[in-house]
Image (cartoon, rainbow, N blue to C red):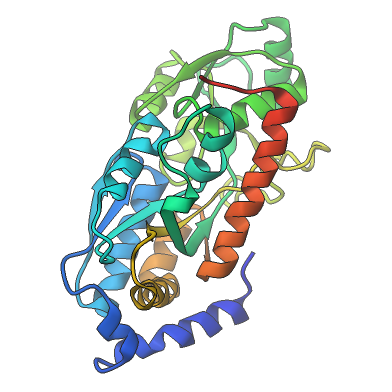
Length: 319
């Protein structure tokens, strides 16, 4: 959680971007910037990437192009990032799962955090377990009872093997002694559509990329209730620790010069304080939570250690 004092301090550090002759401004990319998002249009990451792009325009003199490269639990996006020139013109806006989950559940991965440089965290939010409104289970307790009475029959969706939502589903099932019929999706739009029709009964979703009234929220996988869903309990209230934290930020390829990385970091921290970005965060039901590169990197590494221990405990492997 980021305090108002920290946010103000980082915004003030980035304020030098408003002076055309500043060293930070000179170090910013002069060519068009692209922001690669590893999920489809309309997802929380996509919504917040477009808000970031709009907030950056007055700071860096251009509106970065948001490019969606969804699929393969984020590795399509990472593959494109890895081929980018190390000139600071290609950014990845992503959660940490490709770096904190994938290396621990796959025998081989094409990319690790060593290939990229975290620049700044921008927002955080807890996921939620939701059910189709066509499901007979109308409460969290009723859903647990139904899952226990019909092991392996409830169709439970996620964003693909090795994704954060996949691991959260596994953790959730293990905590409650449940088994589900595991249904991976490449597109969140299709997942939500199947929840609407009842083809899919439950899923783990991030807020902001769907209308809250179209599904039934069962439990928030965090310590705080959603402001617009005040009656939905949290997993902490159920006496269980919150599973993986959900947060997202900007990365560049490792070879980008330090001066350019610092300038991008300052621009992103300033953009996170902009009303455009903060308004989008409010509408998306996420919390603007900027962190500089150092603390952002520390958080990623801490989650990687957490996932490594979890995976060893539950024995999860997908290849």
